[in-house]
Image (cartoon, rainbow, N blue to C red; front, side, top):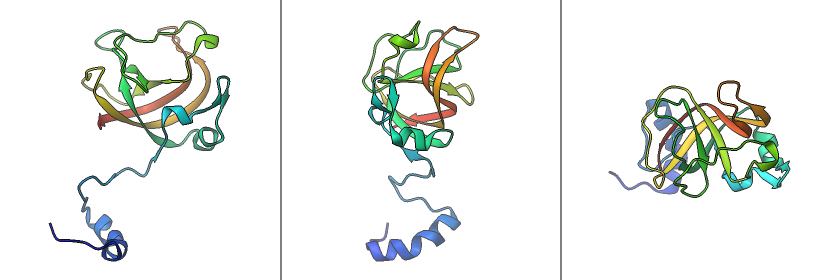
Length: 148
């Protein structure tokens, strides 16, 4: 690959994007990245950044907790690897270091200790899933993921 200076890339980037050229390590998503730890201001209050990103597409890095069942279309994203699913029964027990992920389509599960990046629509506020009874305060919907 040719050596590019920063100036060359700044001027060439729009043409490269239009042509579909992707540089190694470059993000292709327009989604803004937010870490799980940056979603909350306090245990019960969302951060200003999370509120500003609500209902928009975001990327969240983390780890996939083991699914409740093999054919599930959702999983829990955690900031640290967990060998068991942190299934919660009550909003008061909802930890601030997990996010419920509802997949756009079925995907293969990955080991709990593999880092992933999830892209989806950020939803905030308490919701109880009718099918599972799972309580969530933060969700990524219509989501996909890839290995980090």
